[in-house]
Length: 366
Image 1 (tube, rainbow, N blue to C red):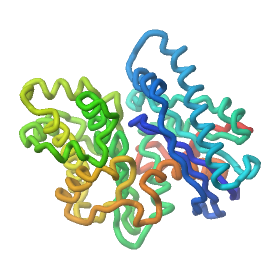
Image 2 (cartoon, one colour; image 1 turned 180 degrees about the vertical axis):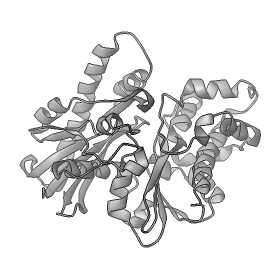
Image 3 (cartoon, rainbow, N blue to C red; image 1 turned 120 degrees about the vertical axis):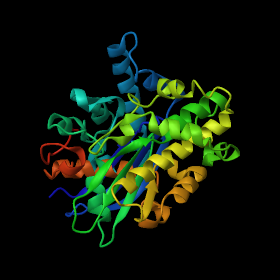
Image 4 (cartoon, rainbow, N blue to C red; image 1 turned 30 degrees about the vertical axis):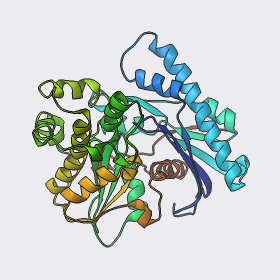
């Protein structure tokens, strides 16, 4: 079994930064966290990655350059982790790197995460395992969410619990004793909140939900946002991203609500995230299971308050389970690298809908 130090690197749908962890994995795949780092995404690179989510001129050329630039940010995260932990590159078995999703179309048989893994291996002197999602999609799955297998390994319990990731998109992992794991995307989280906040305040995100807290939820708009989107009612397995939820999606639904104050729209978008998460849990009879939130949205106090209002059980963060809210997904990708080298499946058939368990990712040696 391949034990030792692994690094996990994650940049999510919000495109706001790169989270990195360095952890030691034992023979059973249990991690001991040694160090963490978060690097703000450079403004120019963030703008380009967001632009590449939609068709544009000279996309192939721009995508290659963006992949290299993102790999430079990843390499910086690696160097900072090694310096903070006093671990050498030679001691690290591998890097598990997600890359930046710019297209996610499992119904068409593909997903695209921009990264230059060979370049990253050269920059760091460490083997890289990347392209984690495509094998699951090749096997007929959604390619997402991938973290439920890690959640099961780390947080399996004698009681039911829900791990909720509030990134650009919200997704849940439902853990139940002696029963199959359930996991799926529930809809937008920070994606629409950040978009609306940037448009009307110039800030990239609504810190602690302070702006939303100044507004009032428009319940008519909230009902319209929920009821006008068939995706919310689809059964799992399902996943989504900016291909589905974006500026056009929101503008189309606001056309008859032109007199709303922007701050009220922000409050309503936070309520949309909370409502779609809690509705999804109620639909599978998990409305009384405790929820443990992670991701950037776990810092949004207004959003967390709305979740607590709508859900019928305790809502807290994964800090209470021993994993920081910003570290969860990066740690999951370190675990996926460990799973790859140990030839363990990284997906769950019951979650993604793939034809079976698959070893995920491809390997670029140092």
